[in-house]
Amino acid sequence: MADFAKQFEDLKIWQAGRVLVSKVYNELSQNKDFGFRDQIQRAAVSAMTNIAEGFERRSSADFARFLDIAKGSSGEVRSLLYVAEDLGYIEPDRAQALRDEYEKLSKASRHLPVQSDDSTL
Image (cartoon, rainbow, N blue to C red; front, top):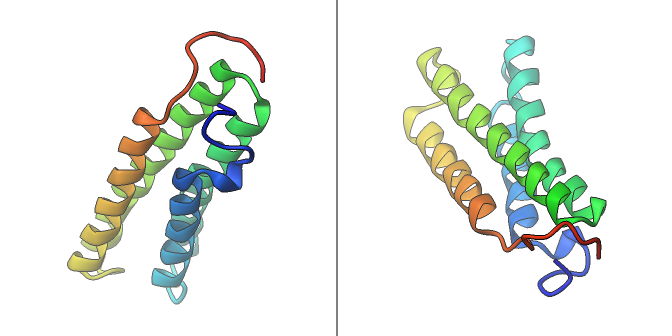
């Protein structure tokens, strides 16, 4: 892991997750369905923070596990964006644009280099 980043803030995938959190928060900031809004915001934050947490664990196995969790949270956001679209909380084109960005985040989490052994850094 140290070959491509010294800290989680250096990771492009984390940077992308950070931008997406702001987009989700801004897109739904006026939504009065507080339960729904809370769920999608938590999933968005989870995608970003699991990348950071996995990196900070400093073992390849933990990093890979937390990337998998982040990928799952990205899927949750994408699924909830369909709900938001179906309920009229977000315009279809904006929902699709966010789903596309979260799909890129999911794909990036699968392709991020992680050492295959369990050695710590």
